[in-house]
Length: 287
Image 1 (spheres, helix red, strand yellow):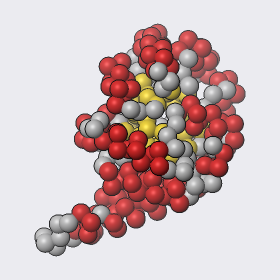
Image 2: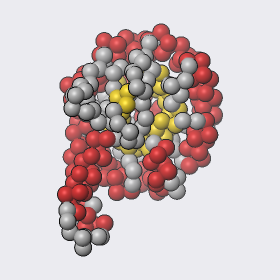
Image 3: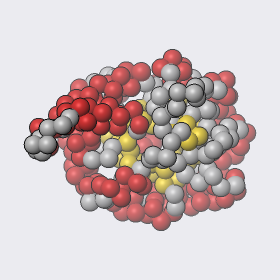
Image 4: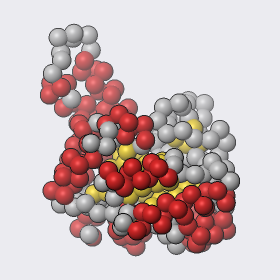
């Protein structure tokens, strides 16, 4: 079933679990994520970043909507890290059921202004909105960008931001970074800050940069009130690493239906682990 981000995350918020937002970059990845979500009876967010949108094009969204409508699990199609009001209009027109406007690198008042404008437009047509306050770090140059230095979300500012913008969910900065962590860098979440933010805001909170963080920290973040966690790098590494192994040096191997099944299976193993870690397995029955 295809629903909005607010409909999905309000239930996760009420029942204290997190929904995985898996970034997909092609149709094979999408169908694999849908298959494992249905196998685990888990709600799912199909996230597509602007770079990924340019790759798959918005023409693919109607096919994703069709597949979502046929599913017995709740599905949200989410535009991840939108960088402008114009992108949000494109997302709404294309058929996304949730959008994120990320103006976190702007001064607070400018972030509020553009986020409020997006909320007013999106809510007018029944689409939910995620905003971001504070900055997420950056580990590599692939996919979503990030800040050189993490600016942690201030609880008082978060309350004001929510009141002034009307966002349905808020991405918070508590120590995560986009991409994969290098060997010399260890992620560490400020869980005490997360506890403060959840108590102050009372709405679904989102964790970006969820790949490569220790499972125990991620598990604790779910218990403390994170309701959506973005996973991109981890599933893509599983998918493409297995694809490299399958291809090997066999120059005659060329048919996608001979190459892709094993990479999809490898990606599904990683996705299943995230679904269990976020306590999302079996939660489709709540909708």
